[in-house]
Every structure is written in structure tokens, then in C-alpha cells.
Length: 326
Image (cartoon, rainbow, N blue to C red):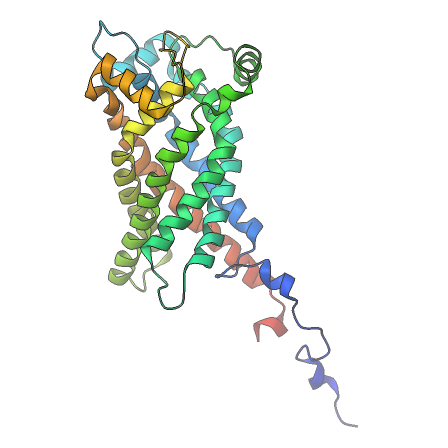
């Protein structure tokens, strides 16, 4: 009797994959939720590891005593440890955790989907497409992160009047209304749009350059490549957007702990007020901790993100049935 089993070695009797199933995956085989998960992990690791530096930046940018020169990085660090102890560097980290995870999930997933839609086979490495995809991603992620970023900044301030995340949210809602959580949204987007455009285009270009040097590198060298490209991208993007970051911080912390209160959230009006009070140097206050934050933060974020993507790719490959792999 003839063996009838070979006809079942291939999925001849199974229905073809549906279009909906194809839409669940993107250009390199990951599902949309996997990009969200990888981005969320990357964001949490990045912001948690670099949070003390972010606290120092916030303290420097919210210095509001015109009769005293703005403190330097070392002086601010010693001041925080002396008054609040080592844990003072982590005040507000709960708000960061609540915002960074969901925001980075939106950030990276939208970036990957947008990149897939904007890139063409003729121009697979178009820097303009990478930059545009990054801008689209940041508009969405900032809408998620800005409220918790406002809470984080207020908790990080010296002599902050808030007991914690819940107390800050409750008092801001009661005293200033929900609009206070989004007072800096426009500035944040206008800051992060060029930041992200520079960041993503620099990262993709640096990664391509490093891949040419190390085309067949091992996994640990690949991780170093992502970290190096990310650090270069983060440092450059942070440097060119520091003035808008100062404006964002001033808007988020206005009226708290002696910070100036602005009559409107107009970026132009806030810039004029800062220049009038502190001179043009006031617009680059905190640039050192900002670069110290974003260079290693971007390295950590990109290497964690790419490592998470590799994990999901390996997981998907192990879960592919034999007839699909063949």
C-alpha cells in the first residue's frame, strides 16, 4: 500500500495566511505588540538608570534666584545629597515609571510602523523618512508622557511641596486644573520633533557606518554598535535642543518653589522672560547634565531596544511550525 503521509508534510490542506495575519507583523517579522513591549522595556531601563542626572538637570533649570549665579553641576549634586540624602536624586521616579513605559511603547511601535510606510525599496535608508517617522512617533508619545513628566519635574524640585505622585496629581488638578498637565505639551513637541529627527537620522546613519566596519560582528559587538550609535545620536540631539528644554521645564514648574509664573504658554513669551531675567545664558542652563543624560541614556535605550527585538525574533523563530519554516 502506498504511503499517503508525504502529502501532509506541507500545509497543502491548510488555508493560506490571511491578510489580517500579515498586517500583525512588520518589515522584520515582529508583531506590533512586540515593538510596544521592547520599547516599554527600553524606556524604563533608560530613564531609571539615568534618573539622578535628570534630577540635577531639573534643579539647575529651575534655579530662580536672580541675585545668585546659577549653581554648577557639582554644587547642585552636593546640595541634593546634603538636604535630601542620596534618595533625593530619585524623588519623582514613580511618576517617571508610570509615564515612560507607555510613552516609549507608543514611541517605538509608531516609529517602526511609520518607517515601514515611508521607506521605499529604491531608498531603504532615506534619512528624511527616518526623521519623519521619528517626528510622528514623538507627537504620539509626548501626549502620553507629558502629564507624568510634569509631575516628575515638580517632585524633583528642591523643597518640593508635594508628598508624592498622588498628592501632586490631586493638588495640581484642584489648584490649576487639568490644563496644567499639558501646559508644556506644545513646547515639548516642538523640542522633541527636531530632537527626534536629529536623533533617529543620526542613529540610523551611525549604525549603517558601523555595520560597514563590523558587518559580521558577534552579538556583543552588535550591542556595542547600537550603544555607540545611540550615544552619538543622543548627545547631538540634546545639544541642539537645550533652549527648548529649558522653556519646557520652566512651563512645567511655573509658580512652584519660587519659579516664575507665566501669563501664557507661548514659547516666545517664555524665551523673552528667561532672557530678560537671566540673559541668553539662561537658555542653555543645564546643558551639561542634559548631554550627560542623553548620550548614555540613548546608548542604553537603543541597545536595550535592539536586544529586546532580538529576543522576540528568536522567540518567534522557535515558535514557527516546521511546515512554515520549510
